Length: 182
Image 1 (tube, rainbow, N blue to C red):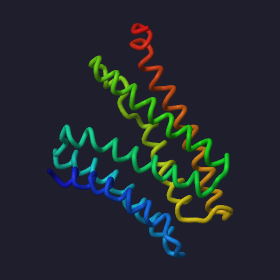
Image 2: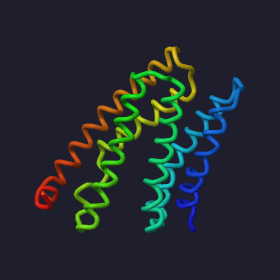
Image 3: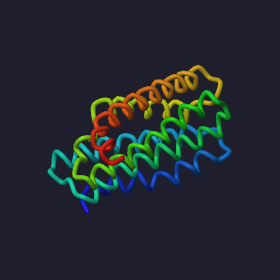
């Protein structure tokens, strides 16, 4: 166990706290939920940075880090779908969740073929993740109907577009291997 892996585990531990604070009936509960999400987002960056800097990358961390990210984002999106109760938030949220399932399955399949590097995380995926985190932070922190929540919805749409774009890029990179398997 090292510090990067502890940070990843902490991100998973934040998930039930996020849900609890999301549903508490107090005026301060949503800002606290947003702060937890922000802290989790920072640990996402920090655990990878520290693992590389201190040469502490482990197979456990390589497995758990993307799982922690996807769990945190999927839970936050599910909570926000309920809170906003709007097609304008639901549609990009479902695109993002669906893409994560497709790409996770694609990466697993490519890894079994020894071709995981063909679908490694790209700069496009990093931009998509940044947009998602900013959107989710705004949507958690500000009530539906406010200008900042509208900015959050627009940013989520931008993240969904980047999500689809990156999925097409990953599928295009994997297509020669996928088409041979048909």
